[in-house]
Every structure is written in C-alpha cells, then in structure tokens.
Length: 175
Image: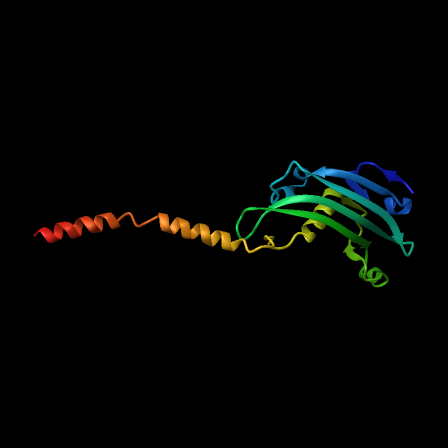
C-alpha cells in the first residue's frame, strides 16, 4: 500500500487502484473554479483523503472523504450561510454498464469508457457540488427578517409627491 502526501493533478485510476494508493492533500477553494464561483471564503482550504482499490480484481474504486467549511449565499435572504461539509463517497469506475451490474449498491457508478485518467480537481469539485443543497438556505426562517426590514423601509419612504398634493389643494382653496 502506497501513501502519497499531496494529490497529483491527474489521477491514474488503474495504476493507483492496483497499488492501493492513499492520497491526502488540501486545496484552496480558489483553486476550484466551480466552487469559488459560489463560495464567499475562497482563501479557505478543503481537505481531501482518497483511497484506491480494485473491486472484483478489475474495477478501480475510490473511497474518499472531503472536509470543508464553505460560506455560500442564502437563497432566501442573501446573507452569509456557513456550511460544514463532511463528504463521504465510494466511487466505482466502469468501462461498460455490464460491469456496474456486478457491483453492489454502495457504489456511485461512473462510466469512464476508455479513459483511465481523471482530473483531481474535477473529481473533488463534482463530489462537493453533489453534497451542497440545490437552494442553500438558513435552517431558521430568515424571510421573517427580510419582511421586518421591508416594513421599516416602506414606513420611511413616503411618496415624495404627497407634499405637492397638499400644496395644490391649498392653492385650490384660495380661489
């Protein structure tokens, strides 16, 4: 079993699985374009641990853990929404759908065709994006806060033409 400290840019599936390699590393959120587009804390780090093995002596698999604290925008109030992610995954990479039938249901199946190499950042980004809710929002009803702020703004902002209406009425009464 081989242990590597830093993740390579490219994952060589079959080579790493045959060697039962374990890779550990971390990335800045800013190094992951699709995550940095939605995260407020792009200078923070994401920790990754990947273990490679062969299932049924032929199917390369990755068991992984990704830990990250990401700050997103709440989709209701647009305020900061911190998310603590602890993503566990078990991936199997098959060339044909018939290979997938031989595996148990604990695997998330990826059909790679003839590809043997994967981009590390793409793989990690995909798993993070799958773990983030479609419309991230606070657990509490943050829309109440918005309604209260809206009421205050409505009370403060009166119609500026109300003053003219009063002046015109005063002039009308003089004739």
